[in-house]
Image (tube, rainbow, N blue to C red; front, side, top):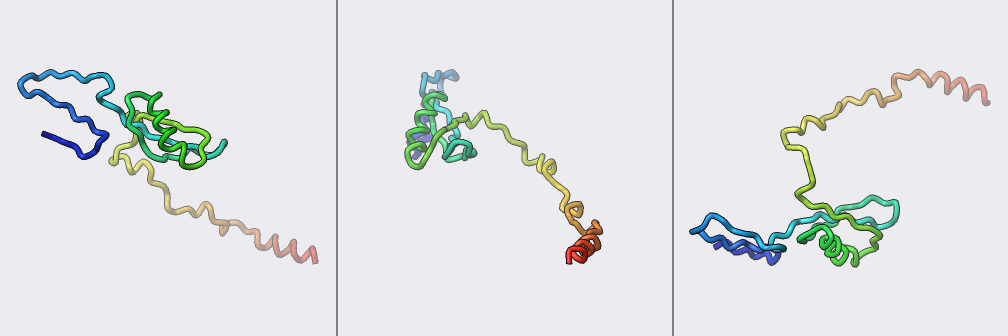
Length: 122
């Protein structure tokens, strides 16, 4: 028997003699990630997750869990299974050039012009 100490988990009781089983409506809840906006125009920030049977109830659970504690003007809920990410093998896709000499102003000959301008203004 696989008992969970997590009260949110409802483990199915599978009958070993028969290979088929049914999941009752509302028995298998989804995990939804919750994003919260503190004031209009601000970015939404991830604040946690809720377990709910559908998106509408997830929004209500998110309001009760994360909308009461600190200032909040908007909430987003996204089913965790719908979030896409790159694989770890694709890490090289995000590599950038550590040599950023194009940002240095050392290649520009402006010091002579600056000194000439200072001399003219005196």
